[in-house]
Image: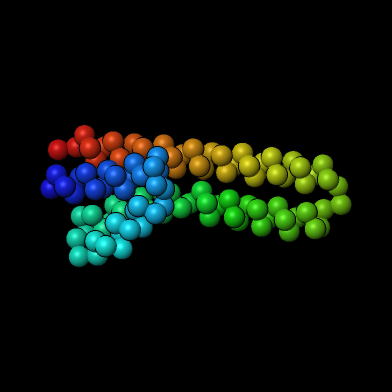
Length: 107
């Protein structure tokens, strides 16, 4: 059980040293152990979410840049999308850190 907690904690805390890749490796290698497999999958998606949102926002900004005549509107859209992305990334990072610490502290 202790080993499971450490691996689960490392899956979440890997946002500090090896984001997305470490939980993906743990997720892929632990298909037979659901106590490690599920938290690794959650950690993977929590760490991947800001990257996916960043790509989506970049595509939205690029497409809107083609159709907007005014550069000021495009700039405000970029600022709005970046601030939403910053909030998502900060929330995702804090959630991963909190969950990682909870796995270490739990009994």
